[in-house]
Amino acid sequence: MKTYSPSMSNLGKFAVAMSALVGAAFTPMVHAAEWSDTALSVRYGTKFAEPYDNNPDGSRVNIQKTILALTNVSGYKYGTTFVNIDFLMSNDKDPGDGVAGQKGAQEVYGVFRTTLDLGKISGANLAWGPIRGYGITAGFDLNTKNDSYGSKKRMGVLGPTLMLDVPGFLNLSALLFDESNSPNGITKRYHYDNHAAFEADWGIGIGALPLSFNGYALFIASKGTNEFGGPTAPETHVDMDLMLDAGSLVGLSKKTALIGVEYEYWKNKFGNPTKGDEGATAKTPMVRAEYHF
Image (tube, one colour):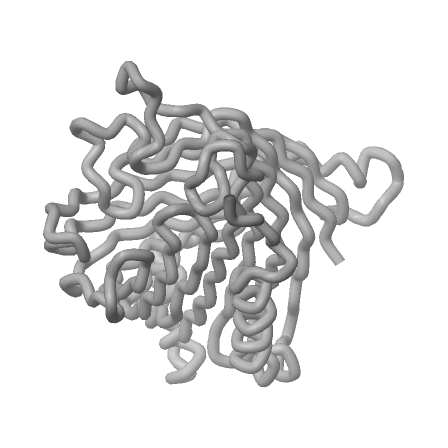
């Protein structure tokens, strides 16, 4: 049997390379940042799901995952940037290389976004009613995972963003996704049909309470035929959390140490139809902790 060695796998090399790539893209904006917030976080849940991971009776397999994340959000002269790298570690219900008995698979998923604020660029006040401003969002997603599928996702993102006037932020975007993958079993990188996505991102304080409601919601249109000739399905992906500013209650600076609960709903995960594959839909409660610096 093949020995599973995460430390020697391509996954670790990819994590280093992706960190360098994101750092290279992000460094100029960090130096020009007017404000910046960096956070380390951990979240844990026992009801994650993966496409094609099902029990013999057809029900989905519940997978435990611990997710470590490094996140930076910053503002610069002409807009904002968002960088997040997730390190996802499954238990043996989602085994490495897809081989039963192996240690759990590991995944690295990175996201980079920058939103140009058209009002800041033009110098004009574009606020109107509930609208604070307008922007253009661009960026990319990258991932790799050492399971049987062996995802190596690459995706470019571009589209307009509407910024609403709320206590905190609420952004609505219409995006075009240009996605490709090169998993195990195909000889060259496969490009899906370009497809639309509609996204809401928010972070809103709850009155004077030390609580915040944060998250994102995505509706992603079908991306045509998959790399193996099968159909893809539209995705609905919602991830939201309710966080308590616990640090401020024990004398730390505000928004330094946070704890809370999170919930993720993901139907037709990565475009895999749930019909006939219960693992393609996840309904996952989690606990979450963050430290900001």
